[in-house]
Image 1 (cartoon, helix red, strand yellow):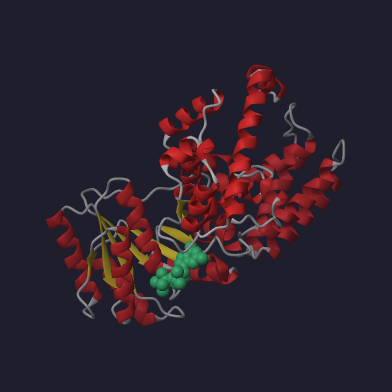
Image 2: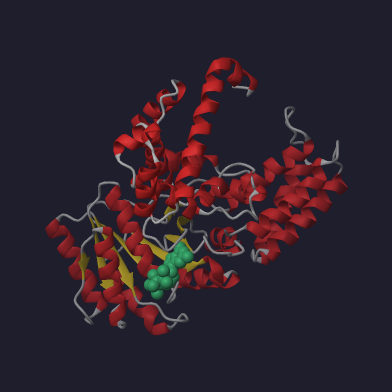
Length: 440
Ligand code: GDP
């Protein structure tokens, strides 16, 4: 995951502060020197890093102390707030048109993720109840049109294309088509080059004039570090972009782009791409990203993910069953499915406070969960309801059906039985007392 190195370095700088009871100016200065180095190593633009540290230092050595916080905590709080501010403060939405459709123009270098992100945004909008239309204006590469068509059909979103025609004309006609067919968003995928070139910019400018877009989103590959910021600056000067989509944040990008783009262009990062799947798109939340960088976890995103995906009623039912110790293997299967909807377990854990650092070397194998699911699916509903029905021939059948061994089936049943026993003890000793012990 991006930012790992930066998080580690910042943690180290703060750790030294934390070991001190009282901070004096030279402690803060030393910590800020480390923060600055950490930012530069993460590929943050030189001037941005310098200004950042100056701002934090000014606040940290000033009178700003809250009674409830130690001086070291106060410094972390200030860094957190300034990181948030650096990335734009709050989340920024797409602009609204005076009359539909909203037209979003995607631009950026080749390979930055334009086509993929046009399709990701289309899916996100569709899931919010909109009726987006994707438009293929990367007319120089036949494969690009085809790629958009494939992604569009995966997202269940129509694609407007006229083969290798004139992109300006295609955009104009796409908007007309959208008006005629009631599409409230038009998402235009444009051609990219390996470098910024005049012909391409001219084409983008002409599309901009012809349509005109409500948003011009520059798609930037976070993995390209400093270069991403230079690209953003040039595109912005030529096109007056309205926002940035920062892609490939799931990779090991050092994170500098996320921290500098806003400061250098004055335009917000509106979305973040976090994987190759169409659902791997997040609205960019500067505050959450700042806490993630500081290793405070991202409880908010986690809660939001959970709420989005969890069927509340099923969760409540499962909790009730668990309290009454009536859980069976059908419930376990349900829970596995809910959990899988939240994405890879490693990602879920990374978003939990303090987990990122602790688990950095632990590989969590999602395949184990798939195996458990396969075994459960090879059982009949009755077997899942009454695991005690299980006998050697049933176990052999289940093992064969799931491509596993009888020992694997036995292991699953044993683990489940142990959990049930544990729940029984838990219940006997009294839930209330237990929870009180946990500080709840
Ligand atoms: P375009 O040339 O700008 O249209 O770029 P594409 O949309 O074709 O993307 C280029 C490559 O990057 C493709 O292989 C994508 O699957 C991949 N890609 C795009 N976005 C992401 C992302 O957020 N994470 C990862 N890991 N890969 C991505």
